[in-house]
Image (cartoon, rainbow, N blue to C red):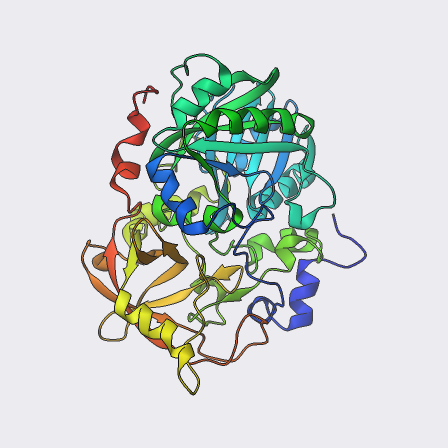
Length: 466
């Protein structure tokens, strides 16, 4: 897959090392999707997914990789920590991959559309990882790929919409013209909307029920028109790109851990395969955590709450390393949490821009990132590094700045007080980083997901069988 522009390893060598390449990258932060930023305003759009129902446009910010052939399931089995037993057609899984050292590459949603056909949907790292192994592993598969809109010219191959919220089923019932059938969580069915066949996945984000709809792009206008018409009388709100990315703050999903393929011997062939003009070759790294050792940015799947997904019923890349983590107790060392930032401290940091002198780093709203991969130090009251804050933004539902974070297990008890270091410790050439000073912001540890319903109720919603 190398091109005339070289490969990822060439880019690393030209920069001097991987950390420098990422830290000095000129790529902008991903703080919105190529969808309309706001249809009304992002505060009302956030609140609508708890009050009525919302329509998410997921057609533009994710990559699609379609895998078809006799070895499609074998490819997935060999690269996924997941079990692939009893995987039904029209069922989806949260595919999770690691490298040989048991460090997280990332996750995506993997649909089984037919017995021998699967479609992976997500941000590029695991899409590239699957495509690499399909291309180099001798698998009998055919693939097609569609990049996110920011990495492609023209329209997507498929549309992807989601309706969710307390009133979602009312909207969907009217759109399909009949009662919504019982469908298990993360299982699928097919609906007819506006005369078009639509794949539908029983889904839910931030604890509210819903379905995700997928079909060919040429059917988009008819399908979206019918959904909008059905939603109008039920108070459905269309969510723009700015609010969309904050949904995961409440649902507790960590969308962008740094994929563990920028260093290490086991991923050297992957770096030589990935073109230097690929999306993953041009991303940026920022935040108050600054370390030349990229392993300080990597996670185990156990760190981010994927332990329940790991199944040792098959051989897969990284299995031995994960088994060793379990045996040694490393799998219990860290825990994913939500940090609720202290309002007074946030107000003081934000307000510093209205006073003379160098102030705190500007806090973007509603997503606060200023790099593709954002890592802030979490410290104890004694100033010790105890965790990493990786996904930060404002929730109008919680009236708070929140961050999805990973902390040492002994600090994971809800109510524990910690401090987040906001701002970079050293100058960089990143365009989004102005002259500023670091500040300490108090935060309180809470569960991830933060929303109780997301942790306990929505998989057994009355419209589904758990």
